[in-house]
Image (cartoon, rainbow, N blue to C red; front, side, top):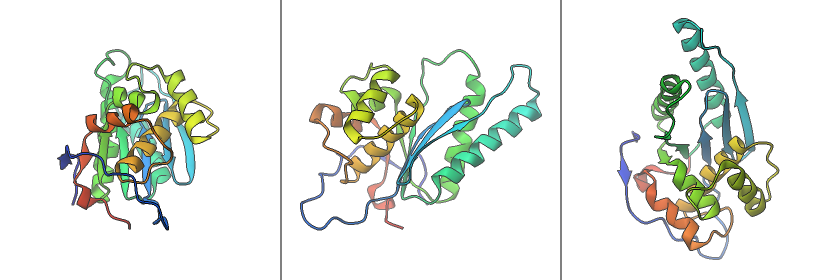
Length: 200
């Protein structure tokens, strides 16, 4: 069973050679949030929304987190690799504790399904999309729409699409040509053992 901690720092795989294209790996990108989680899969992108109140009880918060997690896992389905955005160390306001709890609920459930997991830091996600790790979400949204020809309603779905694209690139099946400077962002991610990622 592959876990989050079976990581490797090996270089990304080279793009596949020309010729008949093998089936695409089923990769999911997850931009986890309490209010709007972006999920990208082979079937497209979706936004999972939720609302809560600061005065919610512990039971209400638990119910909310489990509900969000279940919706996310349903949207992900059965995939060969899940690429999840890592936590932002700059997030000090709001419901940081609950966000972390939701993140771990999802990681735990994916691991229980034997789905290999990669973790992509926010700066690596931005760099892969735009070439600049400090790019704001609006720039990532614009870059994702331009590079992948996607119609995206919000930056959460754009982030998820970029995470999915990065995972496919690492597996040697890039969704589009990406400049080398952008692709260098893959080295800053935690990837599972390559042998653990198999076509199901």
